[in-house]
Length: 343
Length: 126
Image 1 (cartoon, chains in turn brown, cyan):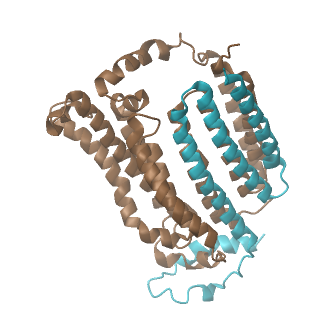
Image 2 (cartoon, chains in turn orange, red):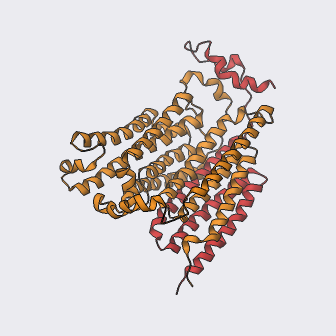
Image 3 (spheres, chains in turn cyan, red):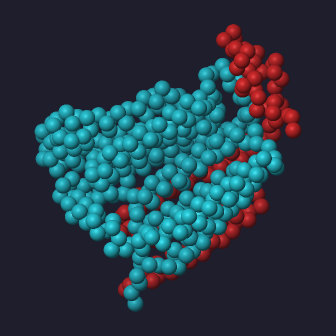
């Protein structure tokens, strides 16, 4: 008896059913904490879906971003704004209904558009006939990188990834510009926030044992992106999550003493600068921007290996930026901008 | 012996168990029910990803993802618990305008104070 594992319909239908339930529930629930939790469950399910579709790198990103960081940032924001929300205000009810109308319109438009999309794993779709075969056939021979996703991400599509890193950097900057306040303005808001009680002995012990493992794992994910799913984004998110865990288990001040705000900002900018700097170095050495083969003479290796090393270097840049941006977002959002006390 | 049907049956079974947890997350009367439901769903997701890897015969690809999940699921639960901890604590009495900035120093300008305090003032007036 043979099983066509790519078309395990029981699996898909169950996951999709649960995803729809979660999405509707997240909108319908009262209370931001419950909604954030249901959104977290949704992210688990969609990661499962991507795993099942063999989009392993995407699933890894979702695992890193969706399971931890986005929910934590939701919660951090929610605990800051929670006190200022008044329930059953008619204007907000109206906005909620307007959101539902907009959501339904978007859903109808998207469902209409899905008819034009190619089937799942359709070998006749344009992506499978024009672009992918070239990458799959030449990727390893040209870049010495077995994971074709990494070579496409950081080499063939290096521009896209560079500007993704810039977008991430811009997100941190915008959050900082909007929220960050100088220290003397916050005092009144600070009084509204209850002090955390208790000694958290178990939590701190767990954090002490888990954080070094997490950081080493993050570095492994970053460096091993050539051979397995992973890379700069995922490794950076996991590394940033370790600082967020520190802030959660101790407090924001404790985490900020280890990773100070100005250092976070330097890392945010430095990662992007490293990426763009490598591109510019390639330009200076007489090849295209981000054409890593130009580094071959400098590194003393063949052009193929130079592209592999170039991919690693830009992944490190992406990792530094993403790590610092995650930490910066948490610092600003969870403390409401005054950096006194977080979640 | 071909174990694939066994693994597939196991994956579908775990998915059904996940459905039970989804019920708890959706219906759960208290927030704590939802938090626990989410935590259990995270654990089940970890197992399911390994099972998908076993079914496809490329389990080494999926181990990293499950490790990331196992590490990061912990953070979400702690964040939710912290949020709940603050929610459960009674809010301290709101400070009066004059008491709020006793040591702000001379560099606090007059224009700054109402801008920051306005949300709390708005809260008192319906």
